[in-house]
Structures are given as structure tokens and as C-alpha cells.
Image 1 (cartoon, one colour):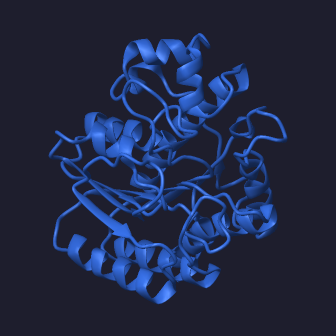
Image 2 (cartoon, rainbow, N blue to C red):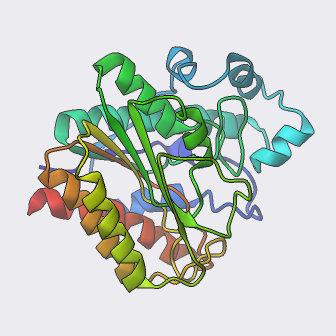
Image 3 (cartoon, rainbow, N blue to C red):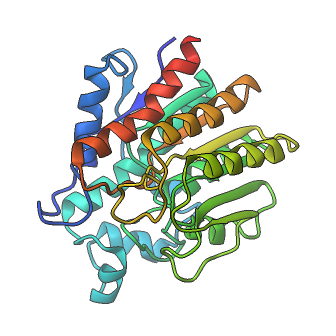
Length: 301
């Protein structure tokens, strides 16, 4: 069986070639996945824009309207980090729709991945840190409402805390939030997840992977019906915005640990990209592809 992969050409918004966010990685990633024969016309799905009904399950109506009408004020745009132009608006709706679609595909196929997503700094009423809508939160609420899943896990291994996600679900006992992140990195003000693990600067593979393994053993004591996995690669030693020293091999081992753990327990998992800001663009795209490559490996084994 092939791994279902969700992609849309509009994941690449027009924000300028000199912008510090590497937006073109989303287009290059699907090209690499096709080159590696991980993605093809039979297993690649194109999402539609997320509906207002689905978005409003998490986000404030006035905030959605501001994004839709391109009417954020200067301070709101500054916090967002993106210029508020039509292609950013389009990308935000389509990428969120992509995670919802990937979640539905994961329910059916056990594993599915978006080629974007993981916008975990978006709160209910505002965007932050290159995150417009919290796609994973929106998809989790969608599954909760439409499929009555009693217990959903959001496992966020991006180097930055999933602060928006933690805040959105702080009073929801049925959605369990976990964030393993750099202690001294963005955001400066952390929120409270169900489990937060803070990492010291310059942590390398061995110590990092022990933490992940111990965390999985702890999570295995609980019963989950679905997992969202935010597979940020900004833990890599060459990342511009990370402060850890994890190697490419360390990321491969992490993905193997996480994905095989839940697959073997027959728990559906939806993977999303999360952050990645390497100086070397081609290396960055390769690191992001490890998520999809590992899913294929697990399915084929």
C-alpha cells in the first residue's frame, strides 16, 4: 500500500525571494517525493480550501474574516511574519484543508501525510510566527466533531513549543497535547501543554532519542484513537532557528521510533511538516522528506 500524500501547488505563496521563511520548500518537497517514487498520481491528493464551518471550530470568526478580507492591522501582520497578500490567504486556507484531508485519509489508511502543516503558533484569535491558522488544531476538532473520536494525541516534536495548540486545548480533556522543544527558543512566553519537555541547547542525537523513547513509553500507557505528529526538522544541527545539534541520522531514527510505535498499535497517524530553516535549501527539503519516506518504509515492512 502507498502512503497517502496531500499536496497543493498553492502551498507556495508569493512572499518574495528574500523572505527568511523558505516557502519554496513546499514545492521542492513534492518534486523530491516524486523523484524518490514516494509520491505519484495514484497516492497524491489535492485539498480544497478549509470550510468556514470547520475553521470556526477553533478560530474566532472576526479573525477568520480579517484573514479572508486581508484586513489585519500592521501589528497583527508583524506578529504573523508574512505579508498579508492574496497568495498567503489562499495558502492558509488550502494548507489547513490539506491537514484536514490528510487526517481523513489517515483514518482510512492508518497513515497519511500533508506536505505542509504544523502551524502551531496560531492561536484562536491571532496568528504568530509564520502561522496563520492552526491546521492541526482545526483538523483535531474536525475529527472530534465528525467522527466522535474520544481521545486524540497531538505530538509536537518541532524545536519550538506548540504554544497556540496548547492554549487552544487547555480546557479540552479529550485532546492531549505534547510538546518537546528547546527551552531557550521562541516563543519567549510558553503555554502549558499536557506534557512539556524542555531541551537544553546543543543537545545531540543520543540524549534526544532517549527522551523521545521514554516519552513514547509514557504515552503508550494511555489510550489514544488518533495521533497528529508535528515532525519539525528544526532540531537539526544546521538549522538557522534551532539550538540543538541533532543529525540527519538522528531525525531518521526519531521518525522511525514515532511512526512505527503508533503503527504497530494500530493507531491512525497524520504527519505534518512543522518547521525547518536550514541554510542549505536542498538539505532542508531532504530532511522534510524523511517523514514521508519513513511512513512508506513502515507501511512496506
